[in-house]
Amino acid sequence: RKEEAECVVKEMMDNGIIVESSGPWASPIVLVKKKDGSTRFCVDYRKLNEITIKDSYPIPQIDDTLDALNGSQWFST
Image (cartoon, rainbow, N blue to C red):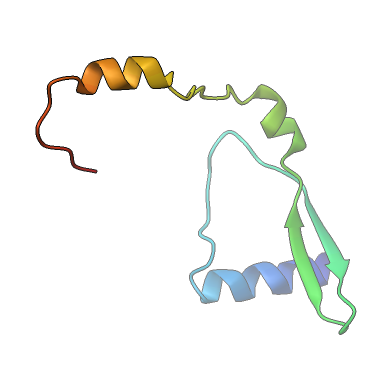
């Protein structure tokens, strides 16, 4: 399987899909055989996801939004 992983990585590097990295983080890969016999390259990001701080973007209250727009003549998105 190591040779197969190296082959898949080389192919993705040659196609510009991935680039070499020397960062402090690395995640394990898993090669999964697809029904057609080809290989699916999967990355296990569970450990990275455990330490990632999630951003919070709460939906504003409609009353606050309407108050902010009160008196406006032009609206744009």
